[in-house]
Length: 256
Image 1: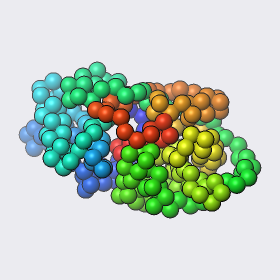
Image 2 (image 1 turned 90 degrees about the horizontal axis):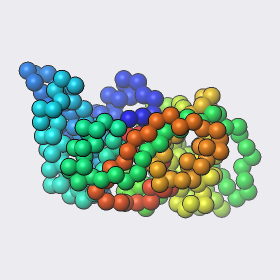
Image 3 (image 1 turned 90 degrees about the vertical axis):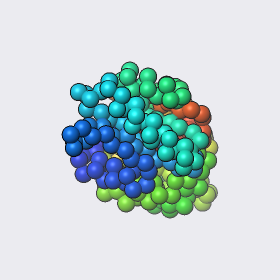
Image 4 (image 1 turned 135 degrees about the vertical axis):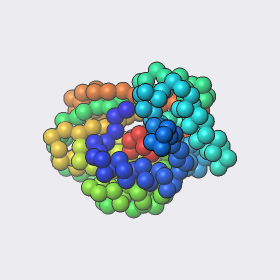
């Protein structure tokens, strides 16, 4: 399941955030953790952030008990839509299908060469992201304003965030970190190209990764136009459609 290039400290920080703001269960055997299942709820949307079992402990029913426990707590806390960024593991996908999460689309990861800087088109500006702008856009595009998540993104070491404006009106935002773009969103399809170009131009590495919901054709076309290479794919499972994810790029498999 590809995501942003993270070190151990990044992963620990991410899971600590999910622990503090979501639902988190672990399975133990002989006082040792052998499995984990955790997720977040944002405005009725539950996202499965992590689901892992040690290989030698798989197939015993422990994983199923974990997922159903998290699912039960999510329902009690008002979850109405359930979704997950799934690996290609058949056993995991089968368990999601049994829970009523069905295929929404593929998630495609492209590796794209560095993009040269270009002159800013007339009437467009880019400046540091205001958290409320990101929340306002996400309320429609992501299906939830998720203020706490944007606070977390902005506080992440090395993360840079920007908003794109057209005639002084915010029309999109994006985050960049090392060789990764995401999350990003734009308020209308006509702004996709500008948001993508401005994000790509702020990557300092020789190449970058962008993970794209299969419904987001604009970004797939952009990656191909920049001679990007498809390097991996995953699946998005959900109980119902939400937001306008054809105008969105995820942050990664932890918070989507």
